Image (cartoon, rainbow, N blue to C red):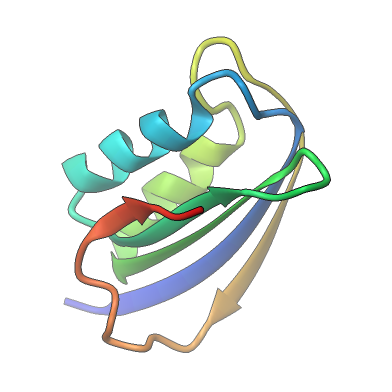
Length: 92
């Protein structure tokens, strides 16, 4: 099973709408490691690492996010895996 890693930056109305918690729950469901956090400019940054299908599913999910989010733009940077992301957490 091939593993991959993606860093995602999501802009729009993505803070205060349960984006991080919903992202964590989705990532844990598809068994992807990494983290998600709010940035001072109002965007959300996330890193997903794990099976390619799961990471791709999470990247796709970021284009819509949870029900009350309004995503304007998603920037995806594909990175080399670190093999250090086993759980998915909200970081501050």
